[in-house]
Amino acid sequence: MSHVKDMVIDGIKFLIYDESQPILQIRGLHKKYNEGKSNEVHALRGIDLDVKRGDMMAIMGPSGCGKTTLLNMIGHLDKNSGGEIIINNIDTNKLSDGQMTAFRRDNIGFIFQLFNLFPFLTAVENVETPLLLKGLNSAVAREQAKMLLRDLGMGDRLYHDPLELSGGQQQRVAVARALITEPSIILGDEPTGDLDSTTSAEVMALFRRINNINRQTFVLVTHNRWIAEKCDYIVHMIDGKISHVEHGPF
Ligand code: ADP
Ligand code: MG
Image (cartoon, rainbow, N blue to C red; front, side, top):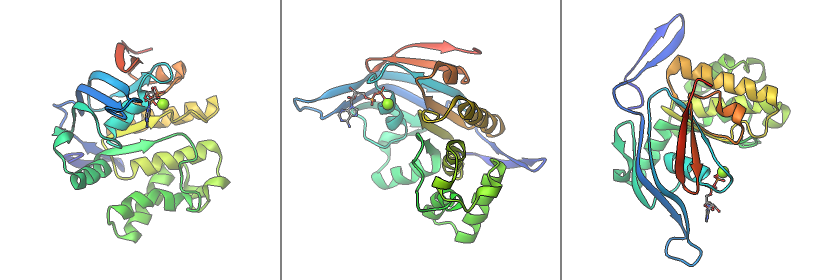
């Protein structure tokens, strides 16, 4: 479902998508934590958003405005309290729990801040894990993980543990782990938050390269204006709502 077919040009695999529909449509989305209790928090208060296939979008806004909540809703890590999220033409409210697990695995990649790698697994083991969870043959999974890591300039670090890698290298492994299943949407919550500015620039360049080659869609939360301006547009949030959208190029 994530892409229609593959095409190989000059050894680079392109994913061919049905371009006619937005990859992500959000309608009237609400999220309440501790709903109905005295400590209820109304974190999302009616979000409407269309994201086209291949967009690179940044989300900015003050702490507590709902950025992480929105990302978690898009990633379906948590249930919403009202509204619709349509990804790849599928209304995700209609999926059963079992279907949701498969849907999430096949369509969405997560890149969080640093130190989200499995510390006792090597780089290549970290990257092949999502494929093994999908039931892929272990030799095939290993080969695909190696290929992607090599493509990301990590070919000489395949068997290192995360702690033997620099911050930028760890983030490359995390990026590879998110991309290995070829998700159509990649979500990042402050994906460069723990990196110095040079390494952040490298990671953003890497995202843009992947975005250009495969038209994979990126939704990135950041508090860094410079990072946000590497995206196509910036969605600004205040108090659980979208206040305005700023369009690039910046
Ligand atoms: P941001 O990422 O923009 O800083 P969050 O999405 O984390 O904001 O939080 C939005 C609001 O929801 C905040 O008021 C926060 O305290 C609250 N919140 C976030 N997660 C939870 C939770 N698991 N339980 C209760 N309240 C939460
Ligand atoms: Mg947050």
